[in-house]
Length: 234
Image 1 (cartoon, rainbow, N blue to C red):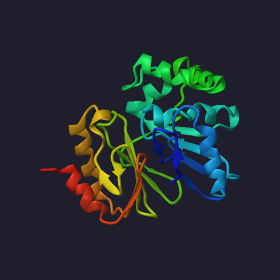
Image 2: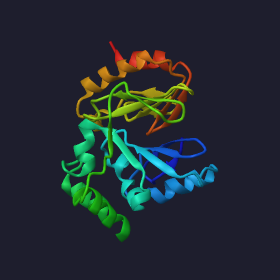
Image 3: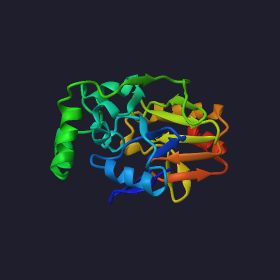
Image 4: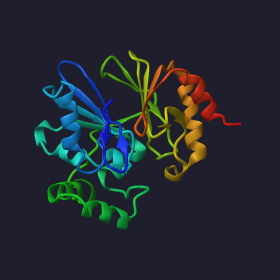
């Protein structure tokens, strides 16, 4: 789990790796790629090539850093995402929660190169950004096994990921951590809260010891019991 301070918020992209390749889960805000790569270098795995990127969903703080990672052309990593968010990530559909005015304001604050990369990738794409779609229940062959859990509600194609060897749930925005406590998705950023809470029930099928929330970081201990309470607040 990486910890990247972006000023108004701190985010937690996650890296899986072996001796041959890195897998990055979520790419941060536009312009975040250099900081993510620096964090990877600081933990001592900067020499391992980035081969794959998994995007948990279409929100700009999860896909915004993607353009810089794709800039290497033939050496660019393979990008994975769920079918139901693929259109937004490819730039063929608008981002669900991003108005034109808000996006323009965000891009205006970026350095020219980062702004240009974002516009070329998402606003005027010349090719799809998603190379491979992932489906509910699929096990990806990364770091000993990574199970895809489709958890719609926050976005239609939101996925969480369960790393089997470490019993770690990479929750994306299906849950958040606040002051060391696991909580459900933020209502202000979740268009379909009913569906999002129903999605949490899928986690009951997994023996979870650790949860990594993109917003809030890692939670350990009593996880399954807490999730069950969040999924059924009555």
